[in-house]
Image (cartoon, rainbow, N blue to C red; front, side, top):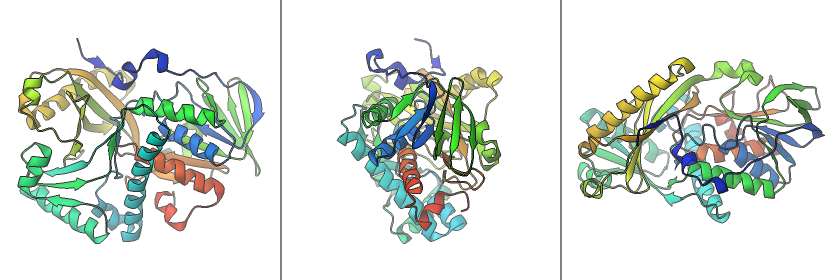
Length: 406
């Protein structure tokens, strides 16, 4: 079968009987909070707010869960993305430790929530292995381990022998991080959406917000065929949009690319190392690799600046081929195996590579969540909890680690 470009394997493999459909928003109503964006962050935030007794309406411009969430690699990682030593240098030890501790707790709590709600999304535990394949990278990885241990963070530095055994690849050293998980991101999102609806959240698809106006006491959220008056607007769109044009300067718009192989024959799989988690290297940008369905390799990487729409198809083909080649340098045995899928996902990257979560002084009644450039999904859960704390007035000074004034 030829490679399917620009499509999500998670959506393609979801039975049509399990795909939900929600009505467009129409009419004029009022509610306690409006969430703009129906990806994982928006759905988790809707669930968290409803659980706290807040009346919520969620507006998604297209279909719930079918944006950047469905284009992710389905990894609930325990880290925000950048190296801990970098954030410690930029923001200080206290803020860096809080960011890592918060992210790890979010990953564990998100997995626990999926289990508690009995959402069928192929949830499985998965550790992370950061690999060093040269003397220079070993020095950098050893330094990173030292900084993390100095902050009392979980991290195990493995020798070349232990790292090679754990990764199934020849490495000079490896840093093992425990506590992550794999998941089908689309099924997880629609499962959370269904749980939110059961708690009273009004979910609306194909309802793009055209304008938000505000006074001192409320905001009016307007769609093409309706409006909502609310004291709270939560923007969970991943990147700033034209609704908050002044905030676009806070992020760089990026694209990340993915390639999923055809099934690897059993004879070849038997010769490959089969780590039970995620493998990531120290390249810039890094490659992130995991097994899917026990017989296919998924690799993410080749990040670039935002790709113009006219060049997207050509770029997808080129980057998919690039990722497959780079994957074959790690696993020579898979040379000749074709990619079944090649796709990309847009994201925003901040100066510190930590997301912005919280209020901005130029947008009364608003809370934002964007700029998560990590490969994982734990940031969505973290955002939902921070946004709820901000809404309830319970945010702590340390929460400013993810704020606009950091």
